[in-house]
Length: 359
Image 1 (tube, helix red, strand yellow):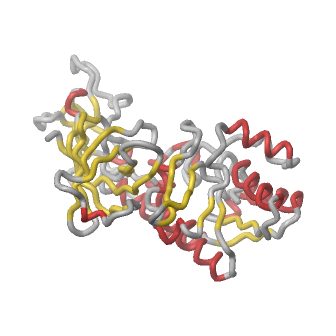
Image 2 (cartoon, helix red, strand yellow):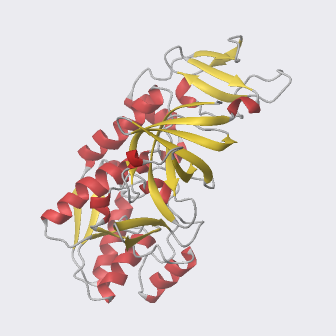
Image 3 (cartoon, helix red, strand yellow):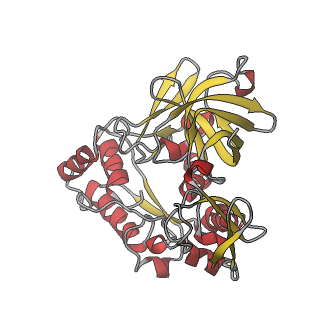
């Protein structure tokens, strides 16, 4: 229970259905600092809101101190990825390592039958076991952030909101249950990044991380200076500070080792081949048993993108090569590439983008 409307409605729904509900909220960062925070999950105010919902519905509520686990599994990884010139997705790491690994293990140790969350995805049982599917509301679907969920975890997870057609339905249910969070705004920022200022968080975690360097074009010609590679992402156009070049320029690549930001025209962003590592496969057959020519699938290379058709080519060591059937822009190392069935709503897993090329 994050203290928001989604997980609160899930708890109320399950209690109404007769389940023996226990609410759990994770304290993920310093409580003293969290009390003053607004607009992010697992902060002091949100813990209070979750407790109020538990009292209103009538089930026990516990707060677990996962601050050390969260820092080691999510925050440190976030900082290191940016220092390496990648663009991380900490919400995926949190689901993968903190919620669906550590918290699920704790829940099972307490003899819980399952762990229910407020994510907008659907779970169903197919011929080969539990399957993950996109949420019914495309605008709320969170499957991109859950690609690392394993089959074993899916057997113990439940997503009661995945079938709802809109967030308005969730708020209507919250109002019907009389929950004090029925009109609470959704969280927007990454919980440990206030106001979306990634660079300030990384500088605090890694003093000296924002070393100045050069902004260069694709031929290596110096066009300007920057105040730290951590302030840039692939595909970025605004805020480069290199006006007068005669054409719009975009961040094409980040060379963290050389402290260089490489820029170029928009066509330089086009990617056809994506190399993945850390692949998690949720298909019925083993990933390595792909037919000749690879698996036919669709992928998302960013959470806001629509799935596009590809061929997936398995490689040794939980790696894969993704062959995009049409070029994609803004594909960045550190982001997730999530697999979907060629047709329908099933999620087939995904992996982490390690490299990409135009051919």
